[in-house]
Length: 227
Picture 1 (cartoon, rainbow, N blue to C red):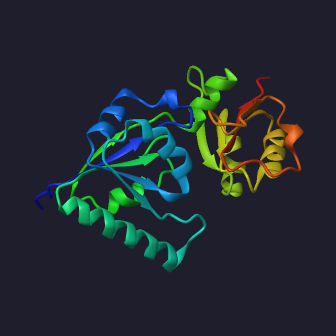
Picture 2: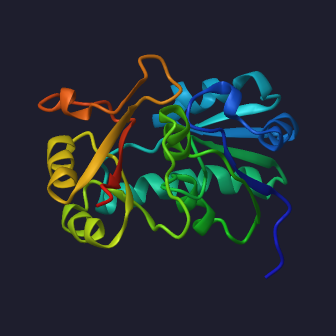
């Protein structure tokens, strides 16, 4: 099938620190006809990108927590909006926090719009930025590394048996469970909250926050204690 005229760019703008956006991302943002910003990330991703945006901004609706038919309807509407502009030959930069190919809303649109030309501008993800802030290596030598959502608690239990280094993301609703499981499996943990944002926390004392509701933008890095 012949590709249509428009181009869809997936642009990662980094985890939050505005200085962590790449030069390529800046170039694409400055040359794009339009910038698509997922509504749930508007105050973050768009604020990072805003100094470099020259075209119009489209705010897309990606409500968190939707599933089934409601989720599909939201995706259908976003596809309809983007497809319309792409058919006009527009170059659209779809911005995401972190990296567009890692737990990103962009992936849903890329799959639906693959009849158009798609280009990806990778971004610095949250766990790389958190490790840098903590001055904690994610993996060394031939060590293994796993990144897993905390909602997969059964899988996390198994992963901790197989990997020396584990990053648990999306921990807000499972914080105490994850922390206790890390300890049970012989891991020490470091907590990153809102890395690169106002109110940031980076600590090797994650136990201090047990029993509290940690921010959505939080993750735990676990490293197996060497015997």
